[in-house]
Length: 419
Ligand SMILES: Cc1cc2nc3c(=O)[nH]c(=O)nc-3n(C[C@H](O)[C@H](O)[C@H](O)COP(=O)(O)OP(=O)(O)OC[C@H]3O[C@@H](n4cnc5c(N)ncnc54)[C@H](O)[C@@H]3O)c2cc1C
Image 1: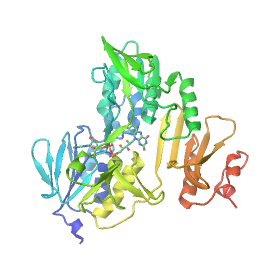
Image 2 (image 1 turned 60 degrees about the vertical axis):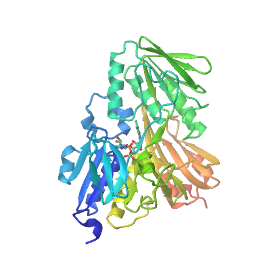
Image 3 (image 1 turned 120 degrees about the vertical axis):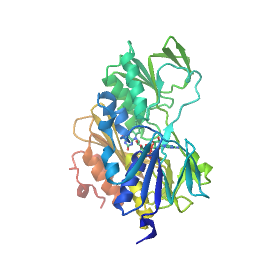
Image 4 (image 1 turned 90 degrees about the vertical axis):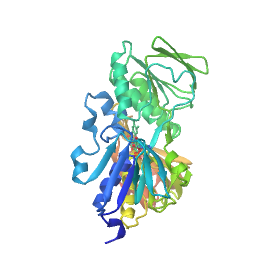
C-alpha cells in the first residue's frame, strides 16, 4: 500500500466549494483511506455558485436544492464537513492549521481551495450605501432577494458589466425590476473577455429586454439619503437606486498561502499536478495559478470546469499517481433566452471569424485565431459550434476560414478543414 493510502493519515481541505468538495470526493474515489476534513467559513451546505446569478436568483427554491452533494453523501464517504469555521493560518513547520476558535488541526496533506471574494472598489459612500451587495454567496442572494421584495420602486443599479453583473441584471429584470441600469467603466461590456462583436450583441440583447447598459461610466461616489442611493459617475451623471449590485471582479484568497510562505503570483503557484512549492500542500480552483500546456503559459481561471478537473488531478497526486493537468478551459453564461458557451482562451488573438447560422441573429459563433491557430470559440445558442470548436482547439487542425464563415457550408468538422 502506498504511504498516501495509509488510513492513519489526515488530508485537510481549506474551502468547501466546487474545488474543495470535488477534491474530497475524488480523493476518496482515488483510494485514500485516511481522514478527510473539509473546512469552510460559509455555514451553508456547499452549493453550486453559477445559478446564484441565474436560475436560483429568480426562483423561490431553498439553497438546499442547489447543493453540490446531498448532506448524507459526506457521511457515506466519511468526509468530515466543518461549516461556519474560518481557518486563520497554516503552520507548515508543525503541519497544522489554526482555526478561528483557537484549536489546531494537524494534517499530513493540505489542500487550499480558498477561491476568491468579491472586490469592493474604493468608492466614496460605498460602505454606507443602502442595500448594496456583491454576489458570491448564498447569503448575498438572500440579502438581494429580501431587499428587492421590500423595495417599492425596485430600481436597480449594477456596477460592472462583466458576466456576473449582466446575468444579475437579466435576472432582476425578469423578477420585475422597474429599472435596471448597468454602469460599466470600460467603453464596452465584457471588454476583458470577449471581442467587440460579442459585446455589441449583448448590449443589444439587454436593450431589447429593457436593461440600460451605459459604458464609459466610472462610479465615483454613492450618496444615500433615506434608503435611496444616488450612484454618481465622474461625468457628473447620477442614477437613483433602491438596490445596488457590485460586480467588478474578484480578489483571490491567497492570504493564508502567502503568510505560510508559499509561492504566489497571480494566485497560488502550483505545478502540473496542483502541488505548491511545499510537497505536502496543494492548491486547486479559482485560487490556483497553474500551467496550461496547451496555451504554454501560467493561467488562473474562474470556472467550475477548472475547479472540478484540477481537483481530480490533485486527488490523484495525493494518492501517489501523477497526472498532468491539461484541459481546454470552458465556461458558460445564461442571459434571458441566450446560452453562451465559451471554449479556450482568446487572449492573444489577432483575427476572428464570425459564423452566423441562418437568419436567426441570436444563433452564431465567434472564432478567435492567432494567425491560423484557433485559440477559442464563443458560441451563442449554438452547442454545435462549441463542440466543433473544442475538437479543433484540441487537435490543432487548421480551419478553412472562408468555409467557416460561409453558413451555406454544412457545419461539420470535415467540411471546415483547411486543405
Ligand atoms: C454568481 C456567480 C456566477 C458564476 N457563474 C459561473 C458560470 O456560469 N460558469 C462557470 O464555470 N463559473 C461560474 N462562476 C465561477 C465559479 O463559481 C467559480 O469558478 C467556482 O466557484 C470556483 O470554485 P472554488 O472552490 O475554487 O472557489 P470558491 O467557490 O470561491 O470557494 C472557496 C471557498 O473557500 C472558503 N474559504 C476561503 N477562505 C477560507 C478560510 N480562511 N477558512 C475557511 N473557508 C474559507 C470560502 O468560504 C468558499 O466557500 C460563477 C461565480 C459566481 C459567484
